[in-house]
Structure formats: structure tokens, C-alpha cells
Amino acid sequence: QVQLVESGGGLVQPGGSLRVSCAASGSSFSQYRMGWYRQVPGKQRELVAIITSGGRTNYADSVKGRFTISRDNTKNTVDLQMNSLKPEDTAVYFCYVDRVTLIGTSYNEYWGQGTQVTVSS
Image (cartoon, rainbow, N blue to C red; front, side):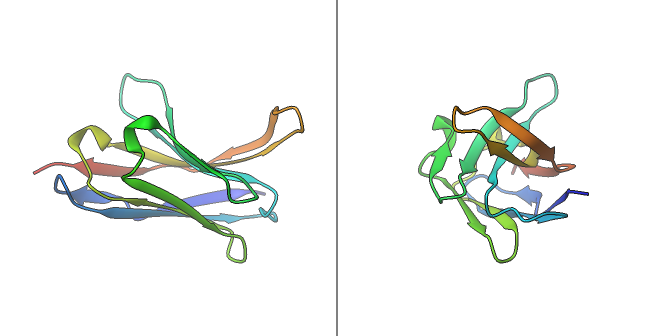
């Protein structure tokens, strides 16, 4: 049974930094894509950053240059380092993993429960 457990959320002032982490269990995730999404009330969940099994990364335009995603396949973890945080980064951040076929179809998708990140003075 796959489980994703996030940690590291909290309250931070604008311009500050925060690191959220996700520990995955129940499978070997070296071939999985891993990433982070976020959601605010009343809005759709949006992609923040994703990292492939080969280490290729993709970021939302709104976080490029400020956020860095990384993974450790030996520990089955994926982290999101968030710098220069803005109030609009306030959201619940969800860990996500999936597999992708050769034609880009996602399968074996799993989500964490989410961790709250609040950027406010």
C-alpha cells in the first residue's frame, strides 16, 4: 500500500524560506515521477514542480527561480525548497507520484494528505 507523508509546512514571513518534504513508502519509487502540487480554497489544484525518474525537472512559471525540487531515490523522498516566498504562495501543498508510459499517459497516481504553507507577516 503506497503512502505519501508530507512534512515541513508552516507559517513564514514574505521573503522567507521553507522546505517541505515527502516520504513515500509501499513501493520502489525510482521509476516514478515525483512532484508537488498546491491548492487554495475555491481554486483548482495546480502543478508547482515535478521531477522525473531521470532527474529532469519542470516548474510552474510562478515559482521558477525561487523553488527547487529534489529527490533521493535511496530514501524515497522528494523535497521542495521554497525561497523568496510570497503571500500568493500560500496554499496546501500536496506530494504526488506517478508512472508515465512511453506516450506520456500517467498511471499509478498517488497523493499525499497535504501540508499547509502560509506566507504572511
